[in-house]
Length: 54
Image (cartoon, rainbow, N blue to C red; front, side, top):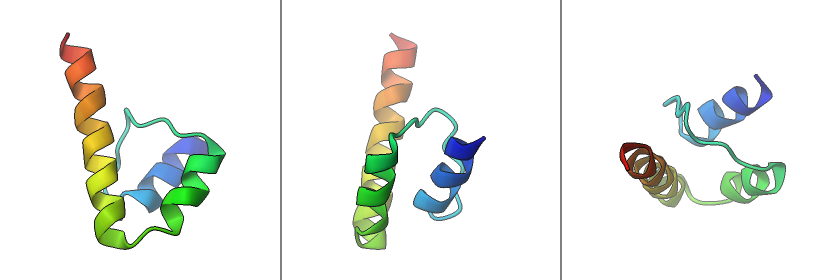
């Protein structure tokens, strides 16, 4: 539940259920510009999705 709340904040309001981050990563992402943050979240999400398909 805690991770879900962090993910919601990081992804700018877009819930990313498959994204699991450590607390350090959460802090790191918060200090990134929103655009870069969005790109990184999308890349991680697509990466997880790709692994899931395989």
